[in-house]
Length: 296
Ligand SMILES: C[S@@+](CC[C@H](N)C(=O)[O-])C[C@H]1O[C@@H](n2cnc3c(N)ncnc32)[C@H](O)[C@@H]1O
Image 1 (tube, rainbow, N blue to C red):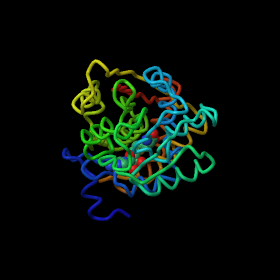
Image 2 (cartoon, rainbow, N blue to C red; image 1 turned 90 degrees about the vertical axis):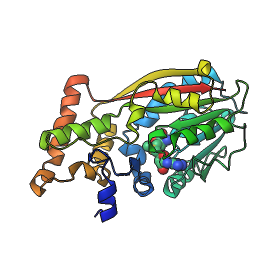
Image 3 (cartoon, helix red, strand yellow; image 1 turned 135 degrees about the horizontal axis):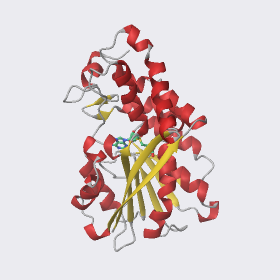
């Protein structure tokens, strides 16, 4: 049951309900609740999109056993898990996984317990005091910029901690199309087209060029900033079933603010109808990402 404060804060300035946020920023407690099921409920999309960008990242700064990787605002270490899968144990670099939500850090510690080169720590991306200046070769911020209260300060911290002189690269990934959110919006429109669709946090980052411009504002040279696009379609199968868990979760409860009980009861069918429409149109739910690579 949402508290009164949550109910109030779960709305954007325009009055549109947010995806469980305060002032457009997801609450830490929602991420804490999500930690155990995070990978499933994302349909592995943030992981797949990072995997799709890995060769582009290492083309900028090669990844070797002496690299130092920071997976920042990492959730359960989603991006780090791609490196652990792709590299052999003796070629794995030192990887620091950080998040400010303790449950995410615990989930990371558990999943990397068998990998000595991965360390997980609770850390605020706005003050990376546990990371040595200019020590990081690969700084990853995978689908977190829109969840962070002060994105500019965050990317300045990324810049400060990266190795200079071309020895460091920041990989900043964000949504161009958040397929899971588009299903929520389509389901809302099927039942209550008169109400505003769910709002995204920091909606500016959904626009092309905004994250790249932020990287330049944070101190990266414009000539060293590259923007790529990656996409993934989640068709019928276990990953789509994982996303169904997300659409059924409390995380999207704010999408039904102002609905009658009878309308709320129609939510699962509306979600299925929206999913089927995506499957018919493109084989599954489409997620698209901007990948901003910023070299020092
Ligand atoms: C959408 S998740 C992305 C997780 C992961 N990077 C991935 O690839 O799926 C956003 C994460 O940002 C974290 N986060 C938000 N604000 C933060 C901050 N100021 N410092 C550290 N982590 C933060 C949240 O706890 C959450 O785990």
